[in-house]
Length: 602
Image 1 (cartoon, one colour):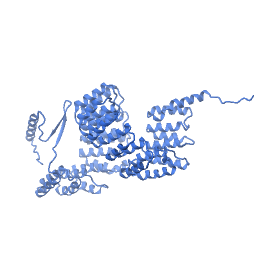
Image 2: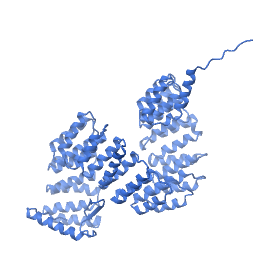
Image 3: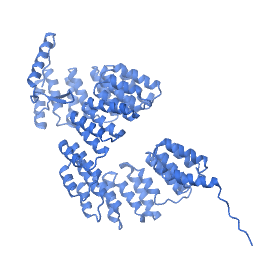
Image 4: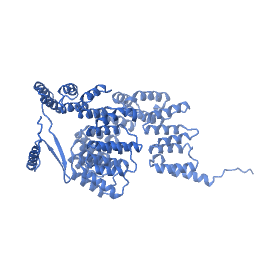
């Protein structure tokens, strides 16, 4: 009797197989770099790194961890990559905003005569972001039709999504494609409705929404998001009321919409009615309170969130700290900082940067420096935040010292670094230093000056009285000056009594901002100071014709005992306004005694 030899399955084979099944099931979803590296080491040890099932998952994991070079290295170790390996690398480059590399992989795939499948083109389309990519998307569309992959609905759905992100022409192409499709699934409808809502075409979006054969939760939330972003909270609320069911995204969208529209009371009502509350919902309302200077409400709500034992993530803390920075509410920012220290939470660089920005904007530079010096792994944003804080508060020399330290520690400055540096020179009157950095930007740091850098230089030269140099720089700019730059120059003309130069600036400025009362008022004061009463009368006539002549009141605010007080000119709404004005009178009297003579203007 003939015996048949059966190959033995060794323990090593079984252990390798178990490793493959256990470790790789969710690897492509993992973004924890240390975990990915550990699994990669085990894959290498088991000699599975060239496996055509394993390699694409490893490429995807490195891509999610923003380790694109590691992803490329994994691909390069595959002797004969198949279409799934090519797709994984195309997707990795697209996810990491490297469109040229994604297309390079696609062209290499074609050179090797590897046929694309129904995933190749959608991944490639993900790399095409922005209106300038419309011709490329049209080229891909032609390829798809030639390869016969158009019949797979996943592919035309990706085309609709890409077309709809390319401005009006792209949106028209998306609609044409949508109309021509005989078969549509829920993704097709949602992609088209989403594209229309993002483009602000809410009437067209709602028309399609009405025509949908089946509406899932995504469709309702997409329309809801469109109305809230447009600020049409009446329509948003009506749609919300019609929803057959609502999820946490629906409630969060409504709370965000009311916060954005300034109706914080309605935002609170929606928050309280929400049957479930996640970290996003809490963050949205806390930030809404903070942005409006409602310190007690924001602080109380933050304490209540902590009591629920919800752990705020980086995005939560950054969002609230940003709101504190913009509104000047330092006490809530300090509370968040204290919570971080109390919980021994490992503060990420991004959260530390937000703390620096908050403390700096609230005027507490010492606390900002403490956070800055405590960051284990600084990035360029850390340096920029600290540099900008010093600049705004007039510490020019300290800002320059910090920049020198940044270069010494081998951090590469970016365009925002140079904006902060030039701003510091401007506020401290360091004209020579400012000139040196501006004119060496491209040569030394490889940064081409943009309009923000020119604006800083105009401010620097204007403050220093170098008006002719400022005007020469204005005429040499490679781009058209904006209203901010022209306004800066007009302010410099006022400071240095340059009526003729002010006249030249105003011609262009008033064309850009014909209804800005402040520009007319400033120009009128310049002419009045020069004794040119005919021009004063002319400017006032223009102001009345274009703006109605109403000048906006000056305003200021101060935080005291967890409450922000707002003050406007001649405001008497505060209960202690009599005491406030008596103090102002006393200050004015004391200033006169030491020789101060105010300049009275409009």
